[in-house]
Length: 249
Image (cartoon, rainbow, N blue to C red):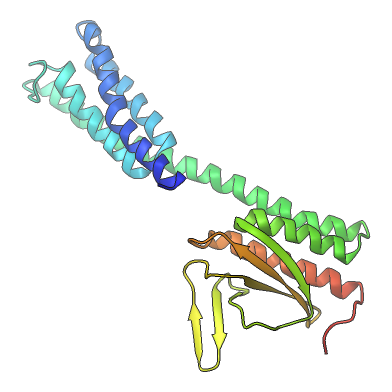
């Protein structure tokens, strides 16, 4: 099981267990707690699950909280039955509020992750600019980009090859897609193909070489990562062109 699937499974388990344990812990105090306060405490449990899980986990946590509130904290106790109108209203509100808050929590977490990822990508792109501004050699820029590509795309390895188009390899294109061009046939990939993939380096309209990517088999990295990889390769091409290096005819 992949790390992401394991995380999602753990979040789903927490969605089932956390509200149950919270409601169970409130049992000794149910005579002193108002229905509103008890419901708010369960909402906190829902938010805690949503903060680490998926939308599905948040929704399951809200349903679980409403069910265990009914079972442990409303009369008749230890039965999934509600007789009081106030209790019915509280359960409905708990379910609605729990669903809304869990969705907002998941959205906020994803937004935070996106911001962090965008900042990392910007830092990576700025690194090549700084190297060029500092007068570093184009080889230093190429090496910097090569290292960045390994982390950005989750590669096993990456190497740069000057001035050759031999091999007919699958190619990471400017739009972030992965294609293999053959006479009379074009193949688009949804995952990494076997063997190496090329990312061409062009500067000033001239082809200088290519990064040969050695990926880990599996799904392609996010499109944003692939677009940043293409931008990094373009910066390497610009550095090579600015240096006035010879290029294939």
